[in-house]
Amino acid sequence: MKAKKLPSGSYRVRLSVGKDSKTGKYLYKSFTADTAKEAERMAYEWEYSKTVETSPQNLTLDNAMEQFNQSKKYVLSPTTYANYECLRKNSLADIAVKPIQSINNSFIQNWINYQSLKVTPKTIRNRYAYLCSVLKVFRPELKLDVTLPKKKLPEIHVVTDDEMKQLLKATE
Image (cartoon, rainbow, N blue to C red; front, top):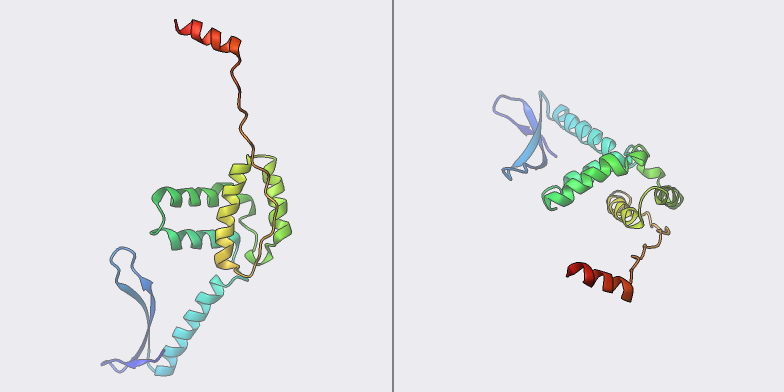
């Protein structure tokens, strides 16, 4: 990052902050000052403050889920994106304030145990899969080893001869 002298005599540093999602054009953050060192210092300070805000030490699970959803917004189907937002706002709200660095296997296992009292195993698997996706991005070093509840097998009712006769009689 190097300051460039402008025709006015000031110095400017431009930092790329990504692309506009609608137009595809690059977006820049500009820092202008009387000296090159001052402009570079302003740019470094802004860049540092940006990394501190998003560093894993200061990141809550809710912030991580929100950033994850935003990063996937245009590559996921609208339904999947809406489901992710619903999970973030409703289903995982009870653990959303937890700092992402303090999440470990025992915490997630306790959360799964608590969830199993309220919802079906399929719902827990869906929530867990989303949580794993978020943690894989923000905590890649975390290796999860938890036990999920067993799937519920559907109860199959075999129709007896008497029930079949009653059914046939009712259709006549």
